[in-house]
Amino acid sequence: MNFDLTEEQDQLRDAVRALGRRYGHSYFVSKAKAGEHTTELWHEAGRLGYLGVNIPTEYGGGGGGITELALVCEELAAAGCPLLLLVVSPAIAATVINKHGTEEQRKRHLPGLADGSQKIVFAITEPDAGSNFHRLGTVARRDGDDWLLSGRKVYISGVDEADHVLVVARTEDASTGKLKPALFIVPTDAPGLEKSKLDMEILSPEKQFLLYLDDVRLPADALVGESLDAGLPALFAGLNPERITVAAMGAGTGRYAIEKASDYTATRKVWGGRAIGSHQGVAHPLAHAAVQVELARLMIQKAAALYDAGRDLEAGVSGNMAKYAAGEAAALAVDTAVQALGGAGMTTEYGVATLLGAVRAGRIAPVSREMILNFVAQHVLGQDKSY
Image 1 (tube, one colour):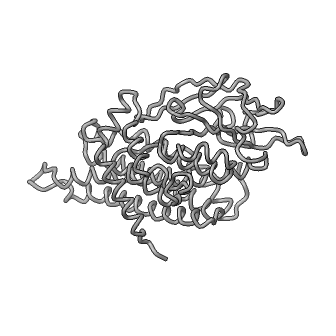
Image 2 (cartoon, rainbow, N blue to C red):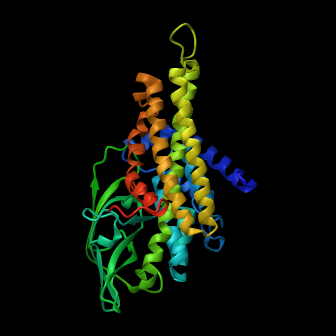
Image 3 (cartoon, rainbow, N blue to C red):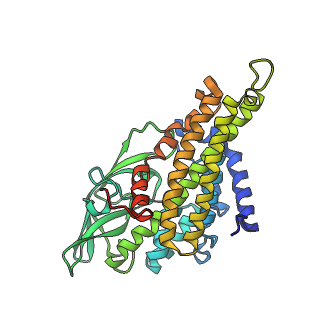
């Protein structure tokens, strides 16, 4: 058992940390408030190779795994720049296409995902079904050699800045007549695809959208994989990387908040000339939050290592636990930081309250804490399914 990063991973962490701090949280906030995207940071991260660390070298990537991509997610978040599309485009879309796409799909999409010139977002959640793919209402049906997609999706991140959206639909299995999941790479400018921005109480450069698909016509090669049999494995291929990188982003955000609060409480003097951080009522909550963040980081490291080793079932358990732990730890860290800073914690200048919405959402999405507890109860503790 080795908790040390390799020399290359250490260098990656240091380099990404330096890039993130050069932009910083003020850049992130200014972009979000202006309704703009973090385009400059994204393109520079792509040019430096950080967006494609998990993509094979033959497609322009770094040849690493989810461990390396989690480092990128965590360090940018620890610098105050939690980029949600890192989770969506390199973690989910690139993994799905690399593992289950055709060779033509890999050649067409992976190089652009690696250098940041292309973004592919992910659409599974629906207004009625949530993310329960057994009940999805978005359906794909054959029309000659083409496919026609119809349905609705909700809470789809970054559609306005993406070239394609990876849509999870259901289609009929000719041999059984049953509906089975299938994934399609859909251009965001396809006729019949409409988007509507959702107003969210979250300060983020990435916007959320409702998608409407009205007989969106796609060529046969829009289907991910060689056949419909690729659908279910392709769907699951993206879920563990999603959990792990979301967790890494949460852990980084927690680190950022604790660092901001610790710097403030170590120098803020009010009573008797002593720094307020010398009082246990201030220091202990921050220390507790720091412990929770570090525990989450350990589970993230374990989950990423298991995933990169090809141990998918174990990675599924650890990835869900990591997401749960990091979601709770990040929310605790930001709330504790705001409390430690007092009134200053609620100002934009000090840069912690600006993260309250995002960390609260991290306890809900991409899978709620309650569904993770259901998963652990059923698959780890051997309890009957409760839903």
